Image 1 (spheres, rainbow over the protein chains, first blue to last red):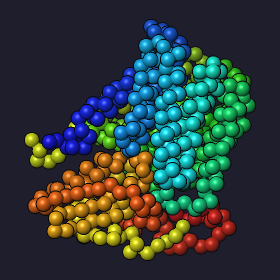
Image 2: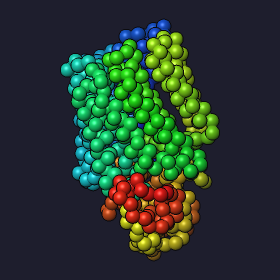
Image 3: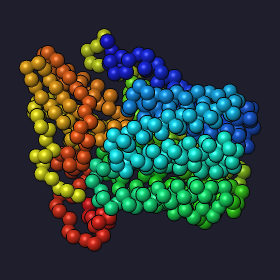
Image 4: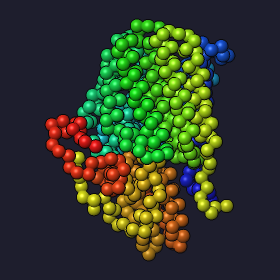
Length: 363
Length: 129
């Protein structure tokens, strides 16, 4: 028996691979839709409308619920399974079916978060409950036909709070003073207030403009990333990904304050992508080599080359924000392919270093 | 922050050889061994074999199965003659930072000496790392 079979079991492993494949498909489609939006002449422009839903719900929603399912097991697989079904529906051009399925997936993930929170009541288990509720709230707003910007605001809150909760959990390793949690809660409440006000649709975005940099400041102060950066290899790479993310979260807040979402043509675009690309995707690059072995049973290795796609991701985002602020179509259009190149290069790197688990001495 | 004695980080039943065999099982996010993180609650060698109780810092940690598998492999490599090796995931009591070993604390940059009193210390700002 190989370690892979021992670790996962073949049918469960197949299930996980299928869910990962759907998430990866959603990512590719979402990036394609994003490039269309930037004005690149690509076929399949109908997809462009669903860029946000593909990237956040179909790709990241499926991935986050799969990660939880790996930890909890069995019944928790309902969330990624339904989310993957919703993703397929969206890709098949049936948003009317995808939206309620995503709502169902968010409820299933909510049940998982509640299960964990009830077993171990703490701030770090309560925040994922709130975060998941944001996924549901955004999806409800989508079904209700609200402005897609309001929907996106809720969905971004889902991502930011999910990641923040994970880092809050890790920060316990540094035994932060109990009162630091009050500051964390204030940042969470500010972000939620911003989402509830639909700040991305209306501007001025005072709550998020303070809440996002507030959260970033909290993370810089209490997160383990500033300690684990001393450990070479994988921990250092992950830490740098996180720290870059905190910088972008701060930039997003500043952008929301100095250039509210409704004040210029692309100010909304700049703030959303500072969070989504700068914070969320940067975190994802650091997180992928840690989580992939646990989910797929495939071991990947991080080497110095991984810093190239990471740097390219952040450079492409700088170009994007500059293009947004200058209202330069050329800069914006140039940034998109560079972002995709960074992600593709990183994926290629992981694939090149990947190998299945083989215990020593096994045939 | 409570600075507990180093002895409280030791598992209740801790066999030095078993713990030594687990030294190379590293948490991939932190780059710190699970032994130093205080994730081993029990490391015993009995007549029937080796028994290890392992916890995670959080129930929603997806690395649990993977780390358990790696612990199992490390023990099998170190004790090939052992009749049975059992690594079990346990959740009680929940992990807390008090369980970090002195080495784990050092790697995470904990202060060695008690901090001087400071009004802002309540929020941790007065801390000198």
